[in-house]
Image (tube, rainbow, N blue to C red):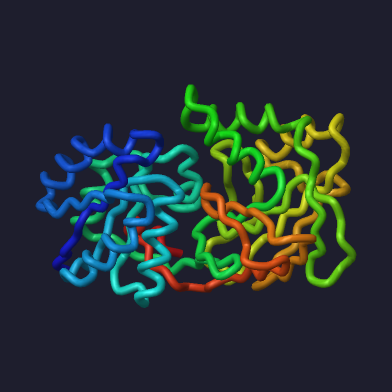
Length: 298
């Protein structure tokens, strides 16, 4: 199979890590005959670059960035009907989504060989919250507060950044009232809707989530009181929080949430405000083609 591939790079990913990894990645891809390298120049530029790559005939698009970069590139590919395969190279803060895939996401040379060579593809899901597409996880409550704090912390990066912000918000955050699918409203510490299993760099939030089952895992952690939060957060890092008697996990294709006012939420590491107090979260099954090593597409 003849592949026409390109590499899209977000230099700002991971607080400049994308720019630092660019020379080595470009060299690795060039060694395999892939010299089409496109840089994003502003927030949200991923969609434009994906459209341009598809219009130029690319059938495989490698994206160097993090969860936010991947999510925006994937959303545009899905909207276009998945005309090209997606390959993901890690340069972000958490790089959570690739933990669901067997891709060599941290090895530019191995990824270049995969893109240029004989690989399989896997059909995977995306999802949407309030009409905003996401690839990995949409979060409400504690996750929003933590992400907002990370944007004010300039002295850390990577997993350490999210972990430090989470510790600082652990006792300060007040919780959030929300009604799920018509039930009575309850106060939650964290409410996550997961396509993938991990978020925040260190948290195994939805251990049973699959990226190709057409469903979302809703993980609801009630506000159990500030003294109980440290232990529960430690459990979430290990993926054992679902054993807590008050933590619930539901799996469905869609959920309807009702808040007192339009909430702020996060999708793949980026903050958004909903258009209304009622928010719909739903799976978008099989809308994306992702490159994987031969024999690992099952």
